[in-house]
Length: 143
Image (cartoon, rainbow, N blue to C red; front, side, top):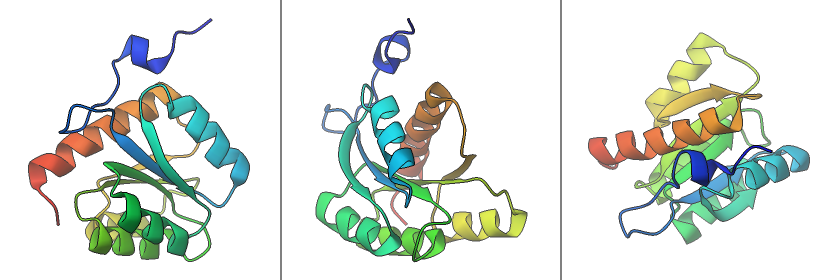
């Protein structure tokens, strides 16, 4: 049996010394559930959203440390990234998709996403990406 992520890498902690808070935004309920379960040892779940509008609303209410945003959800990943940056500038954003269209990735990064990862990424690698995004976003300061 594989040990929990928190035992192999250490949980991600925010500036307050508590576990970093994660917002998951994906229109597929199975994906949302799987991501929540696989990342729950390391991150506190701040909320889950099924579309861009809900992701923005939750970001405004919860101000998570990091948001994992699906590119192809209703309302669009780009709209979600732009909205999250506007309402919660301290939130690092990692976009997640099955597509890797270079122009689209550049557009998402220009809008405020810190990183792009492909769906199917191994949970430990995704957790590491989320931790790195928090660190990079904090070093750069809110946009």
